[in-house]
Image (tube, helix red, strand yellow):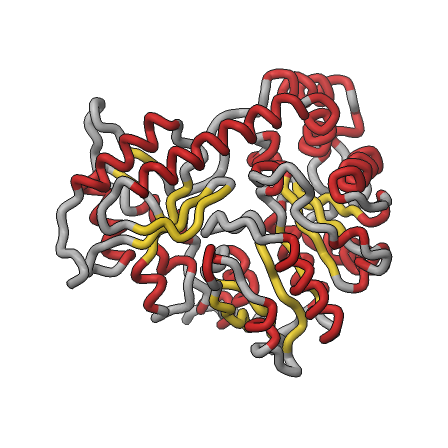
Length: 396
């Protein structure tokens, strides 16, 4: 007899990155033609040495680094985030507006749990980030897909037509995962005004904000003195400072919402790990020049990705930015089949569009996500060569 199983959990699809890794079982790649892995956006190198030394020193000299910390995060890191974001967005944020979470994925889970319950709806542009969809499915919250328009940018008016009495929030990710699209400030303002008018929360995941191509603030939503009545912002230290294994994220919201966030954090994790928070603070205080260089390198790789796809007959670049390119392939087969064929025929691991779209959506079958941030310009050129050489029946 089987033990009871939560049906919402059972119905949730398996983690796509782990599924793609299983495609490598039994595959081999010669030394002169190694696997090009563009399936995941996580940095593959450790943090800079100075940050690692700061963590190592804290591990030895700071007894509190091994103990429980404040549920909402260390006061010094919360204050540093508030100050940095106030400067970046031309706003006035306080430490009480910031919660430090075990990664940005958990920040989203907490944000969603704070606004919606089973049976509610959250409007999510498609293609969507699969972990967002997975969490909503696990909680019995319906993710209502919102089709994107030109440049893979969603339209507030189209979102307005999807609002029902069960809608509780609109979720945006910018720069976007998986499309790379950078949503214009006026689009974000349109969604903000819509959410305010309809009594909804606007959750904005800015995990990749440090790699936005714009030199100005991506939006001015924090300048509204009542922003906390509408906006919940999410951020990740993992991409900026390569702290993926330490799991440090942030959730910015009103002080009133942080009261609810504290309940969730205390129940889920008690606190975010001390060493990761110490590393994140050291990074904010010492690595801004280094981070600017990382941003420039990502922008160079983005330009290389744009050139690469432009040189591929029949391929179309639909969105490109931060770590990602969203491309339309020219083959008759669906993207899920094509992605597995790429492993064996081209030595390329990437994710099919079907992993980012509602089941049965034809756009999922036509698209692929390329996470190019861990591949240098020469590697991107090699990727294009392999895609160019791929045989297959094109769409009639």
